[in-house]
Length: 549
Ligand SMILES: Nc1ncnc2c1ncn2[C@@H]1O[C@H](COP(=O)(O)OP(=O)(O)OP(=O)(O)O)[C@@H](O)[C@H]1O
Ligand SMILES: O=P(O)(O)OC[C@H]1O[C@H](OP(=O)(O)OP(=O)(O)O)[C@H](O)[C@@H]1O
Ligand SMILES: O=C(O)c1cccnc1
Ligand SMILES: [Mg+2]
Image (cartoon, rainbow, N blue to C red; front, side, top):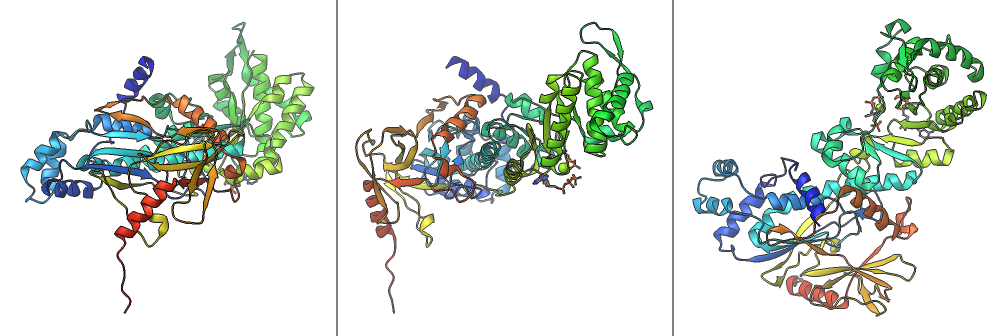
């Protein structure tokens, strides 16, 4: 606990400065005034934060963003300049006492219950339950939504990439340049890591969240060299003996010798590219990973890379690998691997077989699936645009709905049954079958006893009377923990690596057909018999009876 607290405090100090009470919609503050003016200061409310549909045509979502929500609650306070701004911005008839009220507002009376961050979650099951004074619970709406929506969408997207890539491939997030602004980029890096990426190219994300930072180099580095004369020095000190090696001479000689093995003439290969790779190798002799597609992978890049890698080997270093950023990634990666095998055999260097092949260039889930089908030799995908912009579905639709006020349930009706809210203060349970898989999520009224292992429970579709099933759970998981109460965090969020592990362990509890890419089976979310009756009675009470004329 003390260790968690330290981690938490360290990150707390680095909270994203723009997450603050005014990062909200104006209507939250105008409603707060109207509530205040109509004497609702002591009213208490319960809000549920949930989504209605899984993203990416999938049947699961990963819940993320909880830690940031807790930081927000902890720091919730209107500064003097916030109040000044509101005084200027709201209409002049606002009573000054309202601003005095806002000045003193904190989250000390809020209770926040939530599902553990990194868990698989499903439509309609509240991710957060926020209880407390009506005005403050209302004021939290937009900020909590913005903190949970993108985080969960991103973590889900990343987890889907991890699923299609499989566990033997590394995934790097390269998206900062394409992200929806700086904050979108930072969040994308953080939640990609949670979702199962291995690292990011985003240096600030690395520093802030302790995520491994990784990368190669750009085409501009290669094109900045045009001849071998562009090299300032040819020298590299030997890794062990520290003797001066002439890396340039060695590489040129290796290129000549290799041309027979690889069947490419050294005259075809670019000298500028060779100079660039030598220069990069001098700078990073132990971390030499070269971009090989600037001119022509087959005719230039591979030959130049192998020449520099063998020259480095003469100096006591092992190269790391290559990156391919254009062309047919299946074909070129296999070509590169075949080349490495040939070199390994010819020069008795077994490690050459295992050089890393990184692929990038507009990669998405479908590309990875297609590459797997075709066969490829890629060890690592660098993914930017499609991942961080969630191009396949740019938003998750979490909503924040009032379900109880002053102990009285509230229901929001809609012509669209899917949009009717499930009223009242509820608990959520995950029921597991004998084989260890999650079977169903069950919502109950909080006053009901929890379902028990081995005891038959009637699970009902919330709106379709005929859809119901008995479940005898082998395991019951209560999905909520209280994270915030009496003005403080009471369950500390776990460090990022543990949330990342939680994503994978939680996904393992889902049957394969729920996770498959094409036409996955929906996971069932049900309500208890009691809650079913409660919803429908309240529905009838609230739905006006029409008159036909
Ligand atoms: N073997 C493959 N199977 C399926 N998709 C692939 C394969 N190889 C590459 N791709 C994808 O095909 C697209 C190729 O895009 P595009 O034609 O714009 O790139 P390019 O011409 O190869 O490269 P650039 O324009 O950057 O020089 C990319 O999205 C890439 O990820
Ligand atoms: O393709 P993404 O998934 O977004 O990954 C990031 C891209 O960013 C880099 O180059 P950039 O796209 O800036 O230039 P290039 O496409 O001309 O290489 C890199 O080479 C990738 O192609
Ligand atoms: O390090 C890389 O290779 C990288 C980083 C960002 C974008 N594209 C590539
Ligand atoms: Mg690109």
